[in-house]
Image (tube, rainbow, N blue to C red; front, side, top):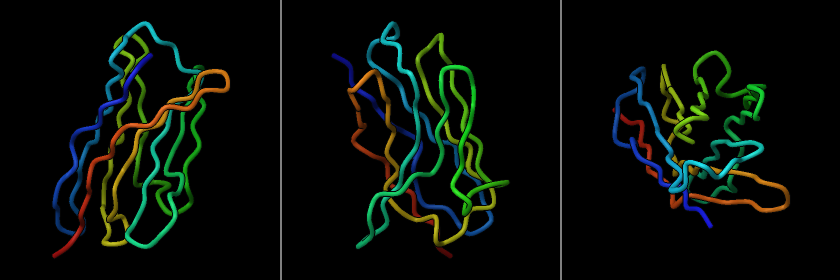
Length: 115
C-alpha cells in the first residue's frame, strides 16, 4: 500500500506563515484527490482544502484567501501554504488521499498559532 507523511508544523505567532508538506511513500500511487483536514482539541476533524487530479480546489470558508493547496503529481506530494495564521487555525493537520473507495491518512502534524 502507501503511507502519507506530513511535515512542516510548528509554533508561530498570529499573522505569520507556515508551509505544510505531505509525501506519499510510493510516487506511482495515483490518488484521485488529496486534501488537508485539521482537528482542534475537543473538536471534530474538519476539511481545510482538497484538490483533485485535474487541479480543482475546494477550501473551507474559514481559510479562503489565506491558505493555498498545491499538488505535485510527479513527486506525489501535497502542500498547504498557510498565510495570515490565526489562533483558531491551531490544531493537528492531517493529509488525506483518496483512490477509488480507499482513503489514506497521515499521522498528522501539529500547528499552534499563539502569541
